[in-house]
Image (cartoon, rainbow, N blue to C red; front, side, top):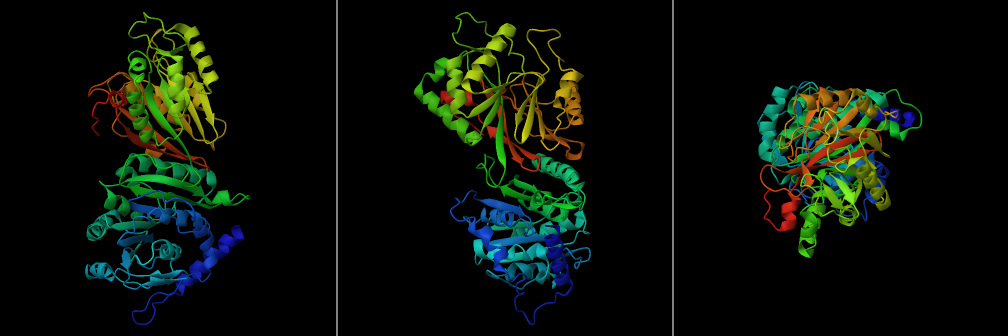
Amino acid sequence: MRAILAAFFWVVAFSAMAADCPEGDGPFPAQYADAGLFLPALEALSGQPDRVAPLAAVVVPHHLVVPDLIAGGIALARTQQPERILLLFPDHFNRTGRGFATTRRAFETVLGTVPNDTGATQTLVNAGIPESCLFGADHGIGALLPFVARLLPDVPIIPVALSIHSRPEAWDRLAALLAPLAGPETLILQSTDFSHYLPHHEARLRDQQVLNILAADDEDALLRLTQPDHIDSLAALYLTRKLTQGRAAPIVLANRNQQELSHAPLAETTSYMVIAFADHLGPMPAQMFDETILVLGGDLFLGRNLPRMLADELATERLAEHALRATGGSPLFVNLEGVLLEEMPPDLPHLTLGMPADVAAYWLERLNIGAVGLANNHAEDLGPTGLIATKDTLDKMGVLPVTHATTLALPRLSLVALSDLSNTRAPYQDMITSQDLDSLLQLDARVPVTAFFHWGREKADLPGPRERHLAREALRRGASVIVGSHPHLASDKPEILDGGDAIVFWSLGNFLFDQTGTDVSGALIELRMFPQGTVFARQLPLPNLFDAARGVALSR
C-alpha cells in the first residue's frame, strides 16, 4: 500500500511540475486516463437512495485512495442540480505564491467535460484574481472532476486555487468577491484533506479537535488550526464556513485515516472527512458512509400526569411523531428520572418520581431507547431497593441501565454516567469524587469517551464553577464529549475546551417531562462515531414533547 501511495504522489508531483496551459482557449486535458480509478466508486452508488438535499456546501477528500468518500460526498448534491459549482482547493505545488488563482478554461475528464462558468470566472479575473495553468495538473481539482462530470453533468464550475501561505485578511477579501457568486443556487465543493504527516494516534487527536471545533462553530479556534497537522487548506474551510454562515451548519458524515487502509504501521498518514453544510438542523439519515449513530437526550420521566394523558391515542401518536422526527429514529440514550414500579402507589409525594413499568416499556421500545442513565438525584427516590428493582425491570425489557460511575461500553463509544446530586444522601450536592471521575479512564484509547453528568441547578442553562471544574477533570481523564442534564433547560450551544480536545454541552434539559412554559426546554445530541476512533457531536433541536402530546402549538 505504501508503494502504491508513493507512486501515486510521485506521478502527481511530476505532472504538476510539467503542467502548461493548452493552446488558445481550449480546455485542460484530462489528468487521469484510467476510468477504473472512478467507476467502481460510482457504481457502488447505484441503487442507493438520494439522501440529502439541499446542501449549501460539501467537503470531500482529493486522494484517490478513498474514492468512495469523494463520490459519496458529491452524490449528496445530485438531487438538487445546482446552477454552478464553486470549487475550492489547495494549491499543492505553490504556483499561486501567497494568493489565489482561477481559470476561464473548461476541463476534459475521462468521464466527460466539465464546463467553466466563464461569466463568473471573468468577474474574478476582472477583480484581480490571476489566471493560472496550475489547474491542469493539481490533483486537488483533478481527482474530483470525473465524479463531477458523472454525478452533476453539465454543471459549470468556478475553480479557485488557494495558497497555503495566504492569510485571513486575504480570505475575507476573497470571500467578499465570492459571496455574490455563492448564493443558494451554487454548490460550494471544497476539496480538502485533513491531518498530514503524523502517525495515526496523533492524527486521530488532531481530527477530534477539528470535529469539536466544527460542532461548536468556533471561528477563533478554527483560525488556530495548523497546516498541515490539522488540515491541508485552512483557507478553504474558512471560506466555506464564511460563505454558508447563517444558512447552513456543518455535519461531518465520514472521518477516515490512511492507516485504516494498511495493515503495516505508517509513520506518516493523511486523514479524510466528508462534511455536509446543510441548511436544516434536523437529524441526518443513519449510516451514510461507515459511521454509527447514537442520539443522547436529557431527562425522561413517564409518571405523574403522563400515563393518564398518554392513554389518549391521539396524544400517543402526537408524542411518537414529534419524538421520532427529532431523533430520526436513531438509537437513543436518555437520563431516566425516577423509579420504575409494577404497581403505582396512590399516595406518592409530588417530588418522589415513580413511573409505571408498563408505560415505560412501551415508550422505551417505541422510541428506540436502548440504554438509560440512572445516575441522577431521583434514581433512589424509593431508596436503594427501588434502584435495584428499576435495574432489574430494565434488564427484563432489554434496556441497558447505566448507574453512577459505570460505563456503557459500545463498539465505538464508552459512555460514563456520573451524578453530582442526590435527594437521599448527604451532602446532596457536589457528590462526585476524584475516584468517581477516574471511571472515565478507559484502557483502549482508540474508543472515544463521553461523560454524561447530572449536575448544575434547575432552570440554569449556564455552568457554574463546579460544572466547569468537573468538565476540566473529565477532559484530563480523556473525555472528548461532555454532556450535562438536570436543569430542565437546554443550553443554547456547546463550548470547546483546550482548543477542541473536548466539547461540552452544558445541559440537554428535558427529553420528556410533565413540565411546560418558557423556563423549560430540551435538546438532543447526535453522536456520529467513526471506525478510526473519533466522534462528531451535533446539537439538535427538540420541541417540548409534553406540550406536543397535549396538542399545544409548538414554536421553534
